[in-house]
Length: 168
Image (tube, rainbow, N blue to C red):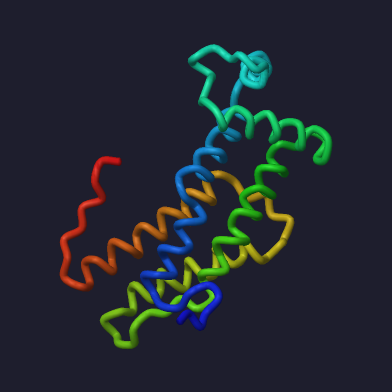
């Protein structure tokens, strides 16, 4: 029977953290960022309801994009970077709960992994629970996810495996 609300351990906490940053959420954030980087003309086309194939990321992503633009316009006076930062912060709020009780085995041989885990905790909790009005970027999000992957690969190597990330 589970005793911890958010999990306790090393691998399970990494998995639960990564589940929150899964492909769907990451894809939404990427599409928001792509839209923000487009020309005004292409931005209009993307939220028009019938964008050209080159600007269409499929359902439900286009619906989320339209909501993103509407909310940013109404609530954030068109400050899309600020709204994207809030979206990232809210996603990380749920994900970073799994970093509170993350553990690394004792012993000097685990020091490198322990350092990376502490860095993940520090950044992840700041992003998710700091509420610092920091304008988090998609790049911040990617760095945190890359650090999670780096830790997972180090754990695999540490326990004697030869990890292969695969192609997708």
